[in-house]
Structures are given as structure tokens and as C-alpha cells.
Image (cartoon, rainbow, N blue to C red; front, side, top):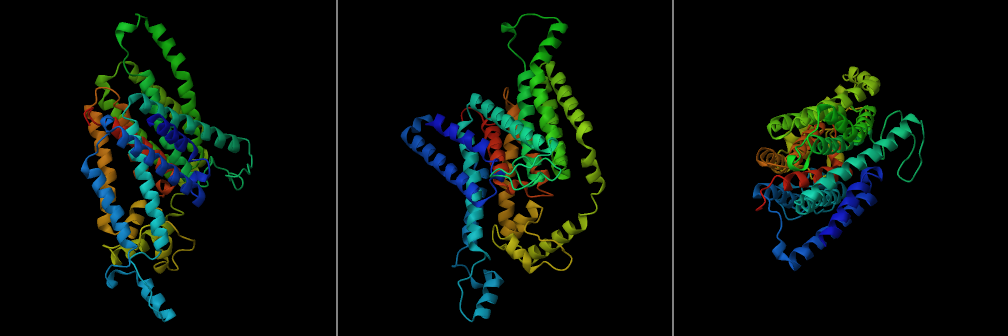
Length: 449
């Protein structure tokens, strides 16, 4: 049963990015349905064979998450004090001259949809945590993520360099001079590629740098060592070159900057564990940096031009942030309803904004606007606690510490990009991140857990 569930999880992981990042109602609903089926199958297995046990999590992870979900249900409830209701319900009742059943949320259906997606991501993380305590499965998941990223990067590069206009069922026009892969927005594809590159870096380091048992190796000279390293390294390094090139050619400033932060975090983690790695680790790190620099030199012209123009679109973003902050000041405790930013923000927008704004382009600000400060802080706490688990695994683990190190780097990537965009609200990115963190946390825990 576990093998069947694992195969289904791999299929979800690989296929989720294909239909526009699963950011359409039919596609994310299908992802949620598949996740629910896997969770039911796992529950049946757990009930049938309780002796096999399951991986336990600290209460500081799942309690805040469940409290957030409970608060979202309160936001859609009619049975809260009338003073808590969104003011639009009272205004609509007065305009229609009838009594309406109000709630904290302005759009209850949107709030329930957002809750469904959040629960789906939580289940994906839970399944990855339970299934990837096995180190062979953990290695396979990272390899699959890297290969999926390479496949989508090759597709994006073929469209970009070939000046193609694919009109398949998941595309709706030309790429517009950037690499977007199967995603609509290049920024979201940059986040996805960043996560895939981190998994590829972890796999490359694990394959090239970590020590082998000397009892099963023959003594060789330094020339043989170099030749052996090149033979083993050229394929993963070529894949890294293509993926990093595709990431840079998305021309996403925030996406590339977030990847640089994540790469630095991963490098610091590897440096911290340097005493447990063999001398090949330095060669692996140097080779990975050389590939990244080469890709940047070859493909960064337009990206550097966009960085020079960074201040041109800043006023619109800052005005949106200021208006969202005003909404938070007006309702700091209750929020306006999870998933209702597009509707609730209309009450605050003014002439300073000249374009349509349905996202805050700052996930932290948007979550506080929708959930209120207490619930938003609980959500942030749950994710931060996962990063702390990875930090503990990095320090404790004698082997396979590269997985928690990658979890830390992935969290740094999505946390940095969330300051400027909403890539983690795209289902394919959230699913990929949840799977990575499930693997990282499973490989961070002691065996008895």
C-alpha cells in the first residue's frame, strides 16, 4: 500500500506543474482530490497495520496549523457576534432592504476554497513525511524533482530559443520573450525552478562529495581521482547549467534573488558540515558555483537591464502595500476572510493604483490582511518550526544531513520570494515545497520517532 501511495505522490509531484502550475479550478481540484485519496489509503494502511507505526511531529507544528484551519471555519460561520461581520454584509442588507446572514469573511466560498487548498498542502507534507523516512525514497523524491525541473526547463528553453508559439491545452500564446515553462507567470516558474535546482544540487553533492567506505575502494592517484570525478560530474553539472540558465532567462528579479539567497544558505550548511565530508566536497562546491556563474554570464543581459529598472514599478507596489496595511490597521484581529484579498482590497484601493490588484505581491502582508495578526502568526510559526526541525537535523544527523540542509534552503527561497510575489500560492509550487519539507523533516528526526 505504501508503494502505491508513493507512486501516486510522485505522479502528483511531476504532473502538478504541467497545467499552468495547477492554478486553474479544475487542475487544483484534481490535485486536492488525488491528495485526499492518498491520505485515505494511508489511513487504511495505518489502521490495518498499526505495528508499522508512523512518523511523529512536534505539537508546535500541527497545533498552530490546525488552529489556523479552525479560525478559517470561524470566519465563514454565521454564529459569530454581529460586530465581527464584514461591513459589506450590513451595507448590502441596507441596500437590498433585507436581513442577510453575515460573517467575518466577505466571500465565504472563496474562504472555503482557500482552506481546501491549504489542507491539501498540509496533507501532501504529511504523506511525504510518512513515506520518506526511508532514505531510498527520500533520494528518489529529490531525483524526481530535479528531473522534472530539467524536463520543464528544456521545454521552456526550446520555446524561448526556438521562438515558438506552442498552443497546447496548457498554453495560451507565445512566451513573450521569457522562459515560462508550463506556467503562466515567469516569476512562478522561477520559484519552481529554484526548488528543483536545490534538489539537483543536493543530489549532485550527495553523489560526488560524500565519503565512500574505503574498504570497498582501491587506492588511486590524483589523476585517476580527477578523471573519475569528471566522468561522474559532467551529466549533473550539464543539467544544472540548463536549469540555472532557464531560471535566469525567466528574467524574474525576485526569483533569481531568492535563488541566490537559498544557494548561499545551502552553501553555509555544507560548509558547516564540511568536517563530515571528504575532500571531494570542495570540488563539488566549486563545480556547482562555476556552472552557476557560467549560466549567469551567458544569459543575464536582460535580467541585469530589468534590475536597473527596479525603481520604475516600485511606486505601485508601495502604494498597494500602504493600502493593505491600512486595511490591517482597521481590522487587525479578525481579518477580512482567508482567500478574499481580491474582493476585500477593493474597499481600500484609490486613485494611486492604476492597475488591477488581486494579490498583495507580499504573501505575509496578504495573510495578515485575510487572517488577522493572531492566525497569521500561527501559520508563520508552523512553517518556521519546520525550518527549525531542519536546522536540528543538519546539526544532529551523521548521514543524510543534506536533506534537512536542502529544506532550510528551500524555506529561505520561498520566504524571500514571498516578500515580493505570491509564487507559493501557486499549487504546483506549494506541492513541490511541501514534498521537499516532508523529506527534509523526515530525515531530520531521530530514528525512534
